[in-house]
Image 1 (cartoon, rainbow, N blue to C red):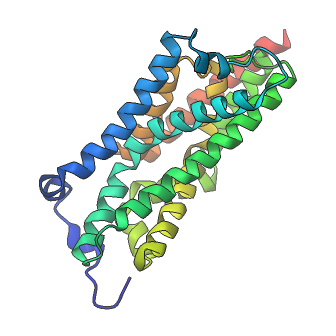
Image 2 (image 1 turned 60 degrees about the vertical axis):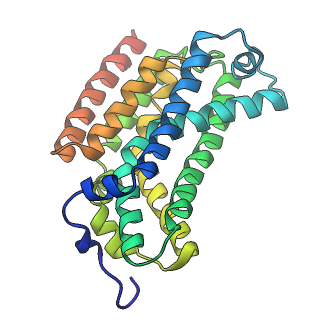
Length: 263
């Protein structure tokens, strides 16, 4: 951090003061997430619209419109799912920046964070295209393969116990520690910090996001369940223990699916 600036320790006392002083910031973040969820609900309930049809390519030969629509669906889904659990980090960053007299840095931080998930949306689009080419998922990205379901569950379960997962989750759960170790001055520094936090958040959650192929992109209840699991891991007391229990559950489900696929 800049010499003479106030450290994150000066933010002790929780988010109450910040929210009372800057309710607009919280409302904007919540509004973006709510808009994303409403968009997903609209797609799921009105699949006859032109955009929904583009987002569910019936043919393996995707058009440019299909690519854009599927990427847009993935990107909106990622923002809607991940932004709520990122709020403690974002609010902490904004509060510290304002205490240091660095107004407006929060926009750069949030933009960089969202950029990471837009990139992940592109990766998800590519994977969906590849799986549909192989005939392993249907137009709504629901797995047609019991073996694929088993592998996705086992991958997510094993990853829950990996050192990378634990390190990324710990960083996401401790905003002050992240700020102390990663603080950079200026808007460019805020953007770099947002990218760094987005990558850590991605490292924490990518395997769980892969489970979207089990329930499908149009299954809002399944998407919400995964979002809640991510939020509990990152925000609830005892998140490391919850992460381990979730991992055990995923492994058990994966083994059960694997046995079913072998029969």
